[in-house]
Image 1 (cartoon, rainbow over the protein chains, first blue to last red):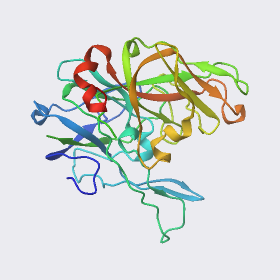
Image 2: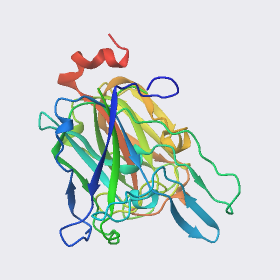
Image 3: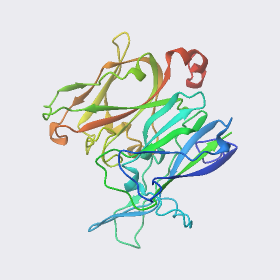
Image 4: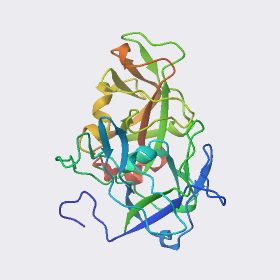
Length: 168
Length: 146
């Protein structure tokens, strides 16, 4: 993970964070906590990346916001949030020392260079280089959460967010 | 890009009436951003953020806005920097590293160059990367300072 990449790390892992309650609905004004995961323990995170699904945001003119991942084929999960949905979501991450480390980071901060096309199908698309944001430190998943502000339309059933963590 | 040790999303609301050309809008006080060294900053428009955490709409374009960041000695360390260039989407995915300085947020401000690009009650979203003053000594080598 050195050449051609702005992040140097030993390993990565991907975390899926559900944006829904037990009924499968996501409601604005709610916090959705990270699933507890022992992999975070004593690991030093050196970068965080958002994985988003391709999303058509306009048909005329055709605008497709290209993501980097398809939804998991998991019957417990629905749609993976795309770049349009990510505009409504904030992420707060706590340190393992219980302090608030990254407060209300827009999810789009984890997908810093938007790659998109505003053209007809089949034409050349713009897949600009993306860079991993070097968010750094130890994460406490039990206190970290995603937040959807009040005023946002309800999300798709069983929507979820995918984040890749780079760590040493 | 240097490591991001801590970050805080600050919201600058433009007020209930549309600001005029040349008007400055100060950043409000955030207790978390007192006694900190700023290490970097990024700014977003409505292309990345549809709604702020407090429910306000986000400015649709940044070309008519600049930012000035003051240090504790009232020096303009960043003076009228175009906010458009602080949006990672516009600069190849990078955020702007700053040589850390002791931030005085409440004297820092946004300047409206072109009021036609903004509307009343919209917000400018600043994601501020920082190190608290008490942790600065042990982390300053990360930022190339001695």
